[in-house]
Image (cartoon, rainbow, N blue to C red):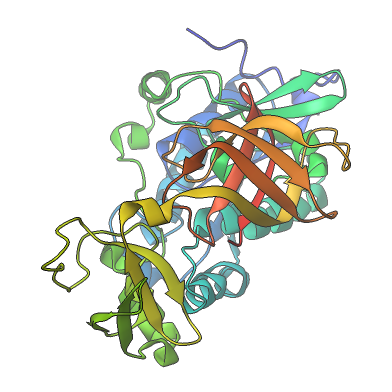
Length: 374
């Protein structure tokens, strides 16, 4: 067992005198987090967010915050004996997450709605709700660790590297981190499943949610077309040297670094594969080129959220992840303003896409990060 006591939330008050709100998605992780709090004697209140239309949600198995998941969360709350509330956040979610997702594709970006959801609906709005309920802490089932350092609460990667969600939580503010608790970050997923079995939870064998929760069948292009009909503008697929290689039905079907499904042939004089190296929304062009054209020595980031102390005049060495599935690589971050920075990689990175996040680490600690702009 890797974990220290996951139910020690760091309060001096007795658990029975400490109210906590548990964010319940209906999955095994948040259900076990709630059950652990009940077992430890805390005054638990469960909250589930209804984020989008039930009819749409039920088309997609493995989605979170859908009709079935709301029911599953209520069953867990009933079994464990704590109150459970469902809050209608549909309009907020559409505005802050779904609309932002669609607009990002129109700008030629590759968005990450899970981070926007954590940043807005979950940790901003639910944080306020938990405060309104006079809770001492907001508990989630995320696989990430909150450790106390010399200057307060720090965000660290989970013990289980296959489940670590720290990349998706880089935008958590210090005030939020002071209030949040993550009881599962110090254990492996198998331990969570075993705890669900021990508690007798019906969700013990429920599959993890996959992909983007509000996209039925994983077809995001259909959703973007429905929300933004103006996105269906055909254009040219252009080689870096200016040669027109073919046409496409709309830029939303392409991402930086994409190699397959381009719908173009190669060149007779050059058999090396072609990759999407740029997307130009103004001219509706998709630019292709050789793999080396994807190499980036430096990138810009915006909306920087920084959780560690910083001296803006001094570049800082760190390790950076540019996609959730990538390993952190050595780099230097140079702050150019209160909310913007440059990241210089020790070795060029490939497939950097605007709209993704760049997250900086020092060992297991999340220092902060921002959104890639180019």
